[in-house]
Image 1 (cartoon, rainbow, N blue to C red):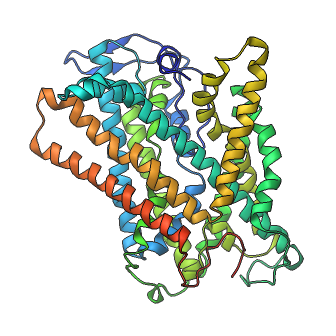
Image 2: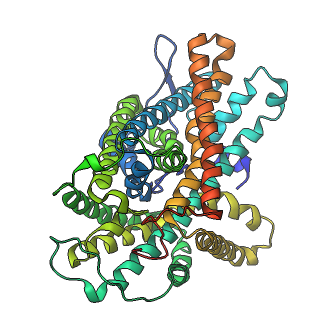
Image 3: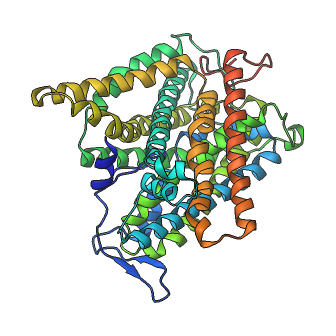
Length: 476
């Protein structure tokens, strides 16, 4: 999709986990308070505060949540929860920065709505550096690039997640019982490598992404939400029972594994791309700040509780997804299947964003009678690409950490603080604010570099320490 098209058409930005496409944003006129600050009043057919809250919650809850217990293991029982709290506060603060900068340009340019890419572009145009002003359009291209990387990364994670969970359910089928009180490791019946399970899912996911109608995709989103909620309730019900003595677990883990924690945590919190579209769809956008901070407080508590309790319950045996540690009884096997069904249907929603950016570029360059063929061919190729990448990196924990370190840290931590400096430098900023923004961007950049390096190093030279996170086998 071209830059001009993205600016002229109703913008749909779904850069986070499990947010479903909705109708186009309202196009009401700008409204300004007597003090001159930006305010926008939505239309009567906009979403209510409760609907917006639900969208915000479900857009932040996906596979990243299930990987947080292993992330806490990589940080420690004390350092993990504290770090999750800090990263959560910083990520939410960056969301607030993006909203504030977007309001600034709406007020200044008399626009009803600007998206993430436009906000960055306008921020660069306001920069004191002439080179940045002359190349401001690359701000939007950069955001689009990281959106594509992030969303296709989510799709890769989904391939690995589906393969892991289905493989374990099938291999443990002969040892599955109705007794859920004993979490005993059973002797698995070997079937096939997890990579072959990924190939088995490939044709079904290709057919799924052929569904291009947004209303049809929203039906899949509803089904995914129901299955995930039921699964999470069952997971919590299990991990809060009979928690082992936590004194046997380290308070602070090795610094060598902490970058893996950072990548997974940022992956889970990366929901910044959906805050502006959600605000724009609200019936009363003035309530969005309350929704944002209240909703993300709920998400942060959920992340810290599941990550901490999951690690305390399973200890060093925690795997890339906590579902892989659940007992081999039919009740919890059904939890794995239910969550997998939700992830399967969510694939099409995450795929929608890169498809809408990439495919129109190629479709516009062929005759009319070839447009449908090219569209479907590109969809097939993109799904195959995510499958190939998942096959090359079949460890769920490393896929999540790599995506979080590479793209999520840029969108959620690096860009927003720099955007605030570029936007408000001419109006005078306090040195404290500049230092704060610089430190946040530095944190994101260090996490980007170190997290990517450690993840790639672990892929090339896996740790010799026996761990229970290798997704090619359900148990070691």
